[in-house]
Amino acid sequence: MHPWLVLTDIVDDAGNCTDYIEDTFKWLNLSIDADIAVVAKEGDNYTMTDVYNFGRIQGNDLETTLLGTWHPDTGLNIVLKGYKYYNRWNFHNLTLRAITVIVDQPEVFYPEMLSEMAFTPGVAAMTKITSQMLNTLKERHNFRFNYSIAGRWIGSPERNSTLAVTNALFWEEQDLSSTCARIFPNWLDWVDIYHPPTTNLQTKFYYLIPEKGVGKYENQFLTPMSDGVWGCAFLAGIACT
Image (tube, rainbow, N blue to C red):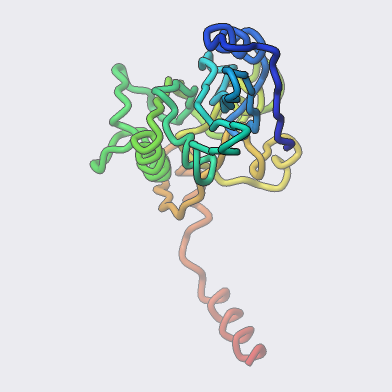
């Protein structure tokens, strides 16, 4: 990432400078980490404007903020002080595309069902915990979600496959997931868990295994150990001491 200082030939015309910034940077794929300062001259004073975007792909408008001024007599005066991301906390109600999982899709969906404390049929506990964390971020940073509902967490990366959280993110049809999932090594060839499209949240979660469907299949591996297995574990413990 390189900082850019863009010098314009606009003199004593703030309106033209605004139009120049809009026409020049509106269609660029800028992001929240952009370091662009556009300079316009007003008499002996130079005005610097900070330019960035929270996400043009989501239809967000260009963000501009007064960065500071420079004058031959007084020197540089930075108005926008502090760490740049602290000055970019307000996403201005930006809409992000979020996908989540409800096993038995309800007739009526309401976003609160993903994070409410009470039990909700079809909504896993790990989905609720992730959604609660994202709700905290939404309130803090002033953005919102347009939800899509899938019936499964993991799906094939091939096009026209059954919709799932992983392939929707892989196809870049969604910005983030309002749930979490277990990742196995063979999925790492196409699921990027380290550098996902937007960001990632990590938390401990409690996984409730249902008694039917996939859960019934998984439960067969959770049966108590037999006497022989306990004996082997006991002997292995003695050998390791």
